[in-house]
Image 1: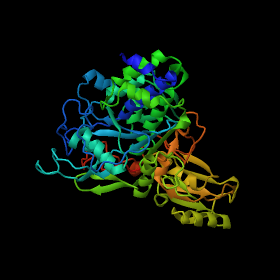
Image 2: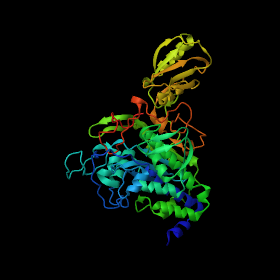
Image 3: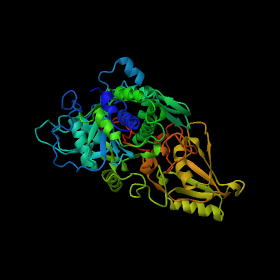
Image 4: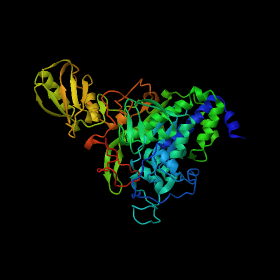
Length: 538
């Protein structure tokens, strides 16, 4: 029986085909992929993993049942994007801007959950530098001493679990860390991602400012764009645009994935079953997956799904407690916020929506911000009662408030005004959240010196100070519905700053010593291209 006849036998075929294609497209978006490893630096686990030429197909064969999480409602698919360049021609590497040294690691890990009643798709991103305990395995790489026959369960960056033991170890490590049973596994790479996006005629993204990242090759003007596969790859790989680091990059990947899902379930494809089948089959060739994830299985998964809308999708990133957790061998890592991570994965296991759980969301009563207020220096001008109140309330929020001084012209007749050197735009968003009624005014300061003091001149309006709390995970990776991530801009939550909002957000430059100091390494090395070697500093 042909693939086409197998798929079209299922009821509600148009919707089924559309969602089959959507699931396959979601798998290909898993590449989101890694940045080039600096020449001469090897991972602690450089040798190729065991398992034969296509270990993805047999990932569940012989997997010991002991210790695996119990089956739960719904279907969980682990999506891995590999930093791998094997087989790419020089011309292709040049076109995709991936000429660096590969690390043979999983630069992207996503858990995609399809609810049991097939009316919701939830995607949880697992940051590549997450410091977790690997499942039991035999080390065969360097960095941990000589090779022995003994098994180990050492800690390490989750992206290197692939190099230590192939897809089997990745699956078992993710299951152990999350408590979520993985039903299917899929992996892809740079070329597979490009092919998938081109097959659906591009992915839509939008930005309110130009985005440039030399590492990924991204050069994106302000506005809304439909990106080719190569340009979409540059967009999802970028780590040095606002917000920087892995959390910002994962949010951009989720935006692209959301647009891809909306595209393949929209009228252009959903109304043309033949085109959907051709698209699904073409995308299938770009992905390696376990042998149980057949086209028929994809169709069955989608058979009872209603037409997918943006509001039927959810996206989140595992909450982080420490963005620079230093450990021997691995260097700077990401330490999960254990209570919130447990709540997030408990929702997946129980087949509940991941949006709306107070355990995983921001702390009530305060606006989450991406910078610690203690890192921001403020001077409130004027010596009157209003100035004194603003200064004290900002201190109560943790801001460094200098001694007040008389204001030129006294109290403003209009709104409270905050002026600052435009070099510090990224930090301006945190102060703007603390004073939501104030007017923000950036000034270009010539020369190499950039005063770091934000000046607050109180006015008759906009002098209220709101409570803020440092919580990068809620700003950059909190659970949201797909329609919160689209280009329409209808709903923005938690002050997310990811190139889609307007206002006092950052330019694409780095802010001197406060720049993103994320390493472009993804292989567990303690060294980085940046002096600090931090995993994901804001």
